Length: 114
Image (cartoon, rainbow, N blue to C red; front, side, top):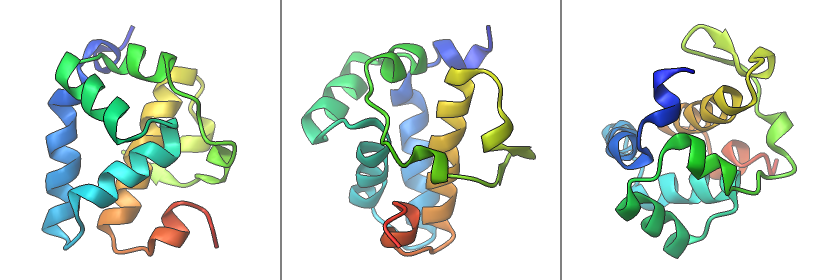
């Protein structure tokens, strides 16, 4: 089992927000990306952060967006679509979406609307 699986989402979340904010994006946009991927609304996300839910439990309760397979590309030197472990792939999807947000892609493109 990879260490990230038992890491709390709350411990990584500030890093996602900081990465986005350094590039002129907002916490609200990070939350929107997380909501798009997981199906969690603002209240559910805040509850998971407060409870320090692990990535394993966070994604176990999530309903992944039906368009998640449109998220492709490389993050941390690995193609997200080629990650074999289902939980690791979900974490990499989230990493990729935050990366795209921080790189300045429009929300429509990040959320695969265009």
